[in-house]
Length: 117
Picture 1: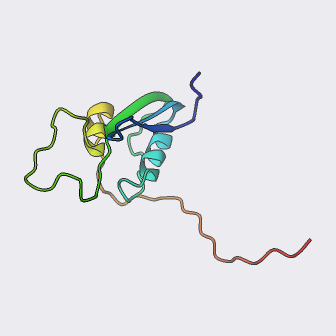
Picture 2: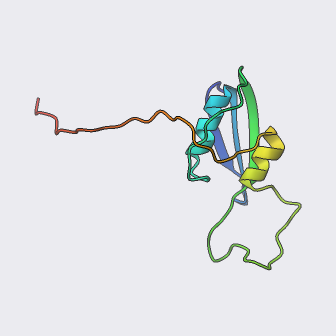
Picture 3: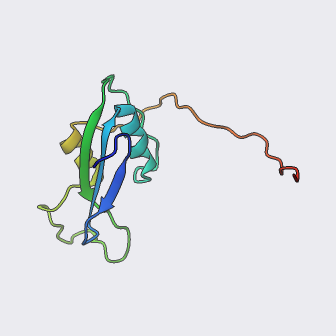
């Protein structure tokens, strides 16, 4: 039975496709988790003004950055799964764009060793 408010990502058996899904989550939570994947290298902030809870599934091609990845000029399977940004656009109908936005950040300005008990 699926659990609400739990994001889960799985890789296909061939390790080329990733599927991320969740139930009963807000767009703010979706944005936070998309930014936390590390694919974009930046946080994602929800500026859609849409409210409510959503169930979703997002699948995209695992983009590899190693010597076995296709290089410029090589054929890429265009019938295969989309890239991450294409998937967000095609499957969510959302477009990610770079903007400056306020973001809450936890700042730790002092740390001490705990005293022995």
